[in-house]
Each structure stands twice: as structure tokens, then as C-alpha cells.
Length: 294
Length: 327
Image (tube, rainbow over all chains, first blue to last red; front, side, top):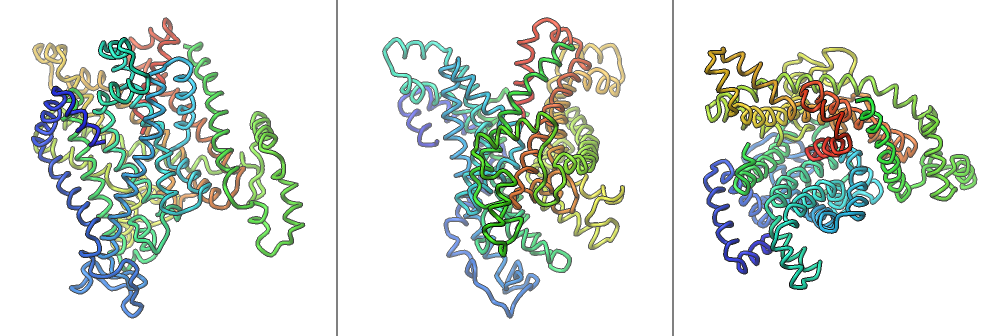
């Protein structure tokens, strides 16, 4: 998505000022900047997991199980003697990948269909949006669980399930954005110069709909990470021994009475990630559309 | 108004058909044989085959779906594979629990969310506002399953004040209601704040102030009343969502509600329960949405006149409002 806005910025000079204006407004929002910094740190942790984690992801030491936090294991060890801190570090990879790819899946399918519905209108609009109305009548968590049950557990299937269950949200956002842009004169001009429909949608309409899409997507990543963690928590989704925060919480539940650190730290990791994603999402919304400021 | 309600109920039919088709298709492609699951791994292939035949699993997709729809129209949602009870009985034995739970969560979230939102809006950019906004964002960011575990840890394990699981009486309700209530209150607080901020800047508020009206009356009588519609929308959405069962929270607190039933049914390949459950939840959510839309008319007289005139247009707008804000 960022490459898209950059290429658009190169071609239309006015777009560049919009980008600069947005970043200026975003930078003024102190909380949003903090959120962005936390996210960048998190991404670095995910990339350099191998260097940062003192122990392996699934390195068991059965003589050293259920240790409370100490100098050697700063977040203690779990029931198999695995270092909780290392597992949280490795878990950041899973969460970020699942979050962004789920949103990518939801956005690609939902955004594509939403753009078609909004651009062509009429019967295709009716059919597409009615199907999404039906999907929205099913609670998204139950839909995700049912899809995951149909596909089987695993990381890829979790991403597909979470992504699919959010498709209607993106379709709605993109459709309504397309509807407003479509009526402007430069689209008519593009029609007059003989541009094809595909070209008009991709080159003219979508770059002008980016603001609401970016906001929805950035908040969507937070939602996707939460859904994926919930799914591992109830035993679907990413399976052990992969270090996934929701799965770690679920495994630590049994020991919550005496070893609360097993549920405390993964929970804090999830909360911190979602919190900073929400800060960034809110900041982006305020910066991209000052009218929506809450 | 009656015509509008009738029309909305009619509009539910295609949605429910679609919902059942989606969930039916998903279950159809789900691997695993329910008959094998019921009889266990030791059963002979002949017994499994006989049971498949009995449950109608050998029929084609179309026949099975048609049978389900025809049954559902007669109020027969099938028989649960595991308990051998009618699915409708299963759902209605669990629904009161989920309903009480959803109601409690909604009350808690309103008690926390609305006052916080009002104070935040009236004292915008104050320390209180910043603290409340941050609290709300934290509330949205906390996974409910984690918050629930932390509350259990604090109030049942450490302080030993409240029971950790079950759903037998008021003392069992507090922790689960707080878990979901905290999360939903964050959404309600944010919506109350932004809606109040919009209203408070209007001219008639300035007029009320110029008249010398007390600040309390300005906020509650003049501002809050006009800010209610978006707040009620969010409350309605949250309530509808809780009616579908707080899937993860019900697991943590061992609450025998719809959410727990659904998760167990999906993992046990208990198809009739899943289909019936999803259909029931979709009906419940649609009814809540309809009630919220009717409530709008009572709160805002301008809307009730519109229900009479441009019914079609209004119905479209109303569905846009409820759908657009749903997450």
C-alpha cells in the first residue's frame, strides 16, 4: 500500500503535499508517534528474534520447569522449562505476520469486490453487498472459527480464516469511498479519453480512496492479531509448539494460581501491540481526515 | 411504523437463508466424519455407514440443505449428535444464561462508559479527559481472555472474594460481567465523548447557557438527549454481539451459554447444533438491530416522521447506520 501512495505521489505533485501534510499532522500527535515507535521496535524484535532471544523457541529443559522470573530467565520458564521471554520474542513474529497478512487477505478480497460493487453499481453492487450483509449477520468470531474448523488448524489457515471473516468490513469501506470519488469530474474525463474500467479503478479511483482504507487497515491489523490470539487460546489457530502469544496464555492458564507470570507476560505483549496499533490507527485517522477527529 | 417493522422482518428472510447457506457450505467442506466421531474409533465400518445413512449424511448437498431449511421453517432444527436432544431445546436451555450475561455486560458497560464519556467531553483536553481516553484505548486493546484471567487471579486467587468459574448466582456474575463490560465500555465511552463533543458546540447549548440554565441541566437535558442516537447504536451493537455468546469469556469462566455451546459443537462436528446456533444468533442479532432502529424513533421525533413518509429510503439508511458501525 505504501508503494502505491509513493508512486501516486510521484505522478501527481498535489498528492505529495497531501502526504507531507499528513505526516506533519501525524507527528504533532504525541501518542500516535509513541505508538509508531513501539511498533517499529516490535518489528525490529521480530526481525532479529534469533539474536535477541537468549534461548531457542522450543528449547526445553525439563529440570528447570515453572521457574519464577530470575536473572537467568527474566520472565521465568513454562511447564516444559522453556524460557518465556524468548518465546515472547519469537511470538512477535507470528503476531505481526498473522496480523498483516490477514488484513492483506481481507483487503485484497473485500477491497476488490467493494471497488467493483461501488464502481459498476446496479446488479453487481446488489449481489455483492447482499452476500456481505449475510456474512455480517454471523458474528465474525464464529465465522472465523467455522472457517478454521473447515480448513484445519495452522498458521496459514488462521490467516485465511481471520482475513475472510473481515472481508465485508473492507468491502463496505472501499465501496463507500469509491462511490464518492466516482462522481467527480476527473473520472468523467478519464472515461472521455477512453481509459478502460480497470485502469480507471486502479489508477484514478483507488489512489484517491486511500485515506479511509489506510485507517481501516491499520485498525484492522489490531483486530486481526486479537482474533488470531483468541483462536489459539481456544485451541484452534496456530498450534504448539510454535510460540504464539494467545497459545502461550492458553497453556499457562492451568498454572495461573501459582505461576501467574505464564499468563501475565504474553498478555502484556498482546496488549502493548494492540495498544500501539490502535494509537497509530487513531493518529492516522485524525491526520488523514481532521473532520473525523474524536 | 407497523409497515416499517413488517418490511424489516420480511427483509430478514433472505439474510437468514444466506446465513444458513454460508454456514451449511462451511460445514459441508469441513473434513471429519460426524458418524465416526459419535461412534468412536472402534466402531465397525458397517455401523458407521448405518449411522451415516440414519443421519442423512449420505444425501447430496442440495437434499441436505433443503431438508435443513424445511425443518427450520417448522421450528425443527434437528437433533444434537452428542446429547440426542432437539437442537432447539439445547439452544433455549442455554439462551437464558447468555441473555442474562449479555444484559449484565451491557449494564456494566453503560455505567462505566457513558459517565466517563460525558465528563471527558465537557472537560475536553483536561487531565481527566486524557486519562479517560487512554483508559478507553487500553480497554479496547486488552484481550478479554487475558483480562478475565487477571481478574480471576486478583479477585478469586489472591483476595478470595469471588468464585472463579460457574454461573449460579450474583456473586458468580461479577467477574465475567466486568471482563466484557470493561471492553465494551471503552467503545461506549469513545462514542459518547465524540457525540457529546459534537452536540456541545451547537448554538442551542449556548442559548441554554445564556438563559442561565444550570450546567447539570445543560449537559443532561439539552446535550445528552441529542447525543443519544450514536451511543444507543454502539450499545445495541455490543448487546447484539454479546447475545451471540461471549465465545472466549464463556470458556474462561465456564459459563454454560451459547458461545461455549458453539465452540464445543464446532470441534465435535456437531453439525445440527452449529447450524441451528448460527441461525438463532443471526435472528437474535437482527431483532436487536430492529429494536434499536425502533428505539431511534422514540428518542428522536424527527426520525419517526420519516418512518412514515420515505419508508424505503429510511430502511436503507437505517441498515447502513447499523451495518456501517459494526466491527
